[in-house]
Amino acid sequence: MDYQQVVFPYRRHADQDAAAPARHPVVVVGAGPVGLSLAIDLAQRGVPVVLLDDGDRLSTGSRAICFAKRTLEIFDRLGCGQRVTAQGVSWNLGRVFLRDDLLYAFDLLPESGHARPAFVNLQQYVVEGCLVERAMALPAVDLRWKHRLAAIEPGPQQVALTIATPDGAYRLLADRVVACDGSRSTTRRLMGLESEGRVFRDRFLIADVKMDYDGPAERWFWFDPPFHPGQSVLLHRQPGKVWRIDFQLGWDADPDQEKQPERIVPRVQALLAHSAMKDIPFTLEWASVYTFACQRMASFRHGRVLFAGDAAHGVSPFGARGANSGVQDADNLGWKLARVVQGEAGDALLDSYASEREAAADENLRASTRSTDFITPKSAVSRLFRDAVLALAREHGFARTLLNSGRLSVPATLEGSQLNSADVDAFAGRLRPGAVAADAPLQRPDGTPTWLLRELGEGFTLLSAAGGNDELVRDLPVRHLVVAPADAPPSPASCIDAEGLVAQRYDLQPGSAYLIRPDQHVCARWRRPTRAAVEAALRRALGTP
Image (cartoon, rainbow, N blue to C red; front, side):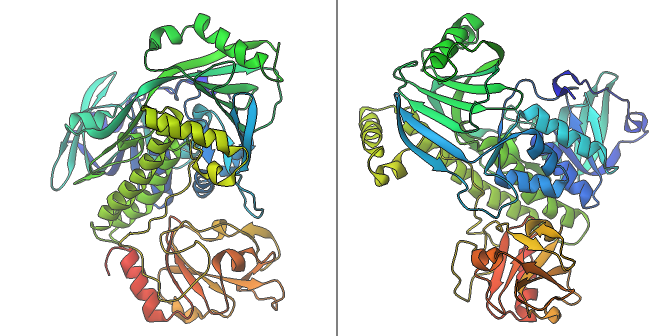
């Protein structure tokens, strides 16, 4: 399907003819990757959701193209991970150049035993298309195209919304509203809220070009290349023989002029002349000029209105932190909002969404700001440091750790979350409370292959080594996933750690156990858990310690 050509029909809804405004548990504003992910998550948890979008098409042009391993794992849980992965270009490798010289190469996923690659490159509108099709297959998602938020009135008991349509305006009431309507968020503007941060005085050109070249699926970044001296260039491969090129332009560049084909084509030709793509004909598919900005709202929660994705925070594109962090926002919020709506947790659980994802946004902002400062130094001292690092990086490993061509998106570790239970035992490895659970291959009791993350389910899971006591979770709303070593006697209650990677990555010794949240973050772990400890950790993870 050519998703760029799809037009979704406006449909008049029964709510528009109701005598009194209809009331819904959740209204999500914005059907981009974040809003769609959240709506699907809520629907899978049994929460009806109204999803409003002011347009009737998917996003125009490639926009975000790099979808990280963690995002793909979330899409697996939402029912479309394989579809997205299969349509995209998978990659783990990158190369960094100074002029024509290779400084170093890196591998973002050097170990085996993961279901998903480090990244998949796929045009945002294709990802949105996969998510839309999944959403439309769920009866609990009420997706309304060309229904634009025109006014919002938050109150202590409900949120009143005015929705503009081609047939005129109508009113809705919502128990909760989630704004996923992008960097120019209408919801944020209507509520008189602002994002604060830093805008960098530089401009970049994005050019998507189509050419018949099957080059390597890698990320290539140049500092001061001969074909674009004094600036930087990034090259990525996309599906359909499309290549993404980012050219640094400088602050004095005129955005309107730089988007014209007569300015773009010579830049692309100069790059191709210095590569294996020399003399290959190409066509310009899409172009845009952007300015770096690192900003966020002071708070992601305002009573019954919550903000997610670019509506709440924005970072520079280098590092692929925008769409990926937004989908993680939805992943964090979905299970919490469902629990609150369904009466299984108190309203305070939503405060943990704000505090956890604000901390994650700050981490992304710091990483993005440092990348931007390195790529585009704005002072003589910054440039001196950057040039010294580049000069040393080819021969010295310590300099490579300082070289920053855009530190790529990784999931946030929710270190200081109030939902975590502090360690009382020593563990090796990085899977401390707050970390995202690591994937690993397993075999089900019947011998069929599977993956750890896909066995965790939609709720809380106690992951324990063979010999774990079922009494620990009896009558608790917790799935018990028992993992046994390859040489253990077969058991209908245990998955087999055939390659030993679960034991290795989790330091899962006999008797050990991990409590894992519905969004697959570790929230507690023990060497010898007791039922009382599991119950206490579960209460804490639900915001009621």
